[in-house]
Amino acid sequence: MTRGLILPHRLRVRGEEGAVVVVGALVLGLVALVFIAFFAMMFLAMSAAAGGTSNKNSSPTALALADIPAELLPIYQQAAKETCDMPWGVLAAIGKVETDHSRSQLPGVHSGSNFAGAQGPMQFMPPTWAAYGVDGNRDGVTDVYNQVDAIWGAANYLCANGAGDPARLRDAVWNYNHDWGYVDDVLRRADEYATAGNVPSGDAAAVLNNPNITLCAGCRQDLIDGIIDQRVIDFLAWAAQRHQISVSVLKTGHNQFVSGTNRVSNHWEGRGADIATVDGQAVAPSCASCRALAEEVVGLGGGRPTEMGVPWGDMAGAGGVFSDRAHQNHIHVGWAG
View (cartoon, rainbow, N blue to C red):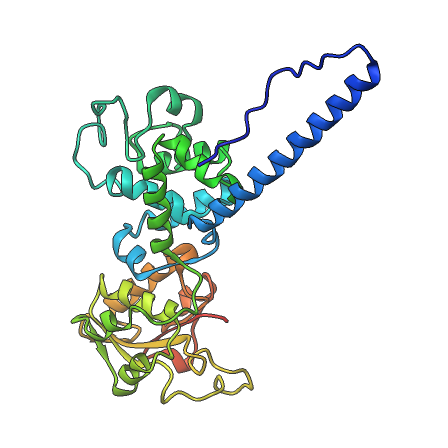
């Protein structure tokens, strides 16, 4: 990969006539500009083809929801967004590659240093942390071993190296770890973590065969027919990592319009799901497991549904959550187009 065109520090033009000197300098300057433009276009093309650049505002895939700890996913998303609007999937992928989102018990992850001197969940060298570390959880301490601080510090460091610019993203990741194989691995994982939605239902089989998901007959057929939005599939896979759930309706069997309105329901577009039971209990105001699931959904941050109908009136207003008489016996989740 070409990292930049290195031009001579000084151009020496020999000649006795000033005009010759000027013309020669102009010609050399034009040639240099042509080469710079060529390599810039090549670099942009290679960066765009490398992946990881299109998931700034994407939803987490089923893999992301299953693999990234629920408490860390919104941290990755927020830190990426609020630093330089870099792709959150890249930041999360680095957390995965470095320490498996802090699950690793190797030296240097939770205390001390590894053989190379790196420290913490995002594996900073001490001088780099001193320059770019962030008190992400705002507790007054900039702690390289704290997961939130480390994620914000990594976002800060990546942004300082240009991660907010798609054309410089590969270089930013390379500056994090000087290995092009590492860069390719991170960007591949970033694309596996994030999806823009409305893509073929590649994970439908996993939902259909998940022992923690009970599907109505129409729900199963909807998934088989490939008419359900990927975000719904990803959500069901995520929920089944935490609870046993039953789904009473996806698209088939639901009215075209939202009750009492002329607005087309997200169910009708394959973008909605109704959950009837959670951990063997029917959804109702008294169901503690059901309430727990709803609260976990709110905690998803950027990966949560656009709308969620619940039986608990006190939850209404939090990130598209609403409660009415029609949603006392199920949890509705839906995504806007």
